[in-house]
Length: 456
Image (cartoon, rainbow, N blue to C red; front, side):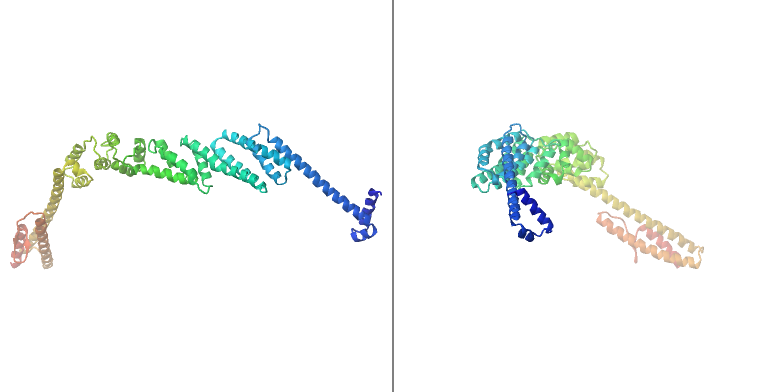
């Protein structure tokens, strides 16, 4: 049998029949069988060659992974390839791999030890992902699958956790380490329980003195809330708590910065509540009566912590210099703890002085109003004299009559108000009563001249 000739004839028939295989089969059934057998043989050869190549490739991976010069990434790449081979691997392949799997794992761990923590975070996650692939690839072998699954968990839950903890224990929180901390926070928030990692950071930060220097104070204020998330909130809260803690020490350079940049209320509140006598004494020498600010000085006076301070002398000098200024005296005596500092007797004297100054102001105002009324009455009296002398027209006389009535009424009201105000201030003024009016003696004299002119 000439197979080549049969195949040639078969192909000619296919072409002539325009690919009508029913007609081809009727004319040359043997040709059909030969072609089908040939296709099956080719497919079989393909799969055989492929299987051979896969086996050869798999064995080559096992050989390559044994190279001690491999990098971490090369180890990981080989392990991923092995995961692809395992579901259909030969017993020989599985035996070699299982025998060496622990050495591959240890080799990668040794390489991880030499990396920085931010690189470790990504590499540990990458390695754990590969071992989960191995676990899935060996699902038909429960024991081996569980082995790889446990390693994946150990890498994240133990190895990476311990490396982060070791790094944080020696951490210096500054601009240089900030990107690493942001990376740790980002990783922590990918976990179901981010507190496991975040608690390591907060425990470390709890031991940092947030009031030690202006540089660190400004560093905390510059943190990115979007990147540090919970750690940002912790740091800002820790910084703000300094101003609410009576025993906290905040560097004077921080206080200077706040005073110069519109945040004096923070400083005032802190100094007023500071109970650490040694540090309050230090701040007293630096700031008290040095800033030309009564408000700032009174913050120290308000603090009841006992220190070596000349508060009484300072306050007495202020009272002496401003003895005629009732507003200033009122602010001073009304400020917290001032009365206790100067003594209650002197405090009462200041209050009486304020009352006396204000009484004098009222008295002066009353007298000024009385004199103004008297001057107006004098004008009316002069006009009345003109009437008596015949120097005014009838219309002018009538207008003057109206003005006189208004003046008398105003004089009465002023005198009544004068009497009332003077009674309130426990003062007296001599007044005389007429049948219709209550006026001062001087006003009454002028009115009598007007009445006399009218009758005349």
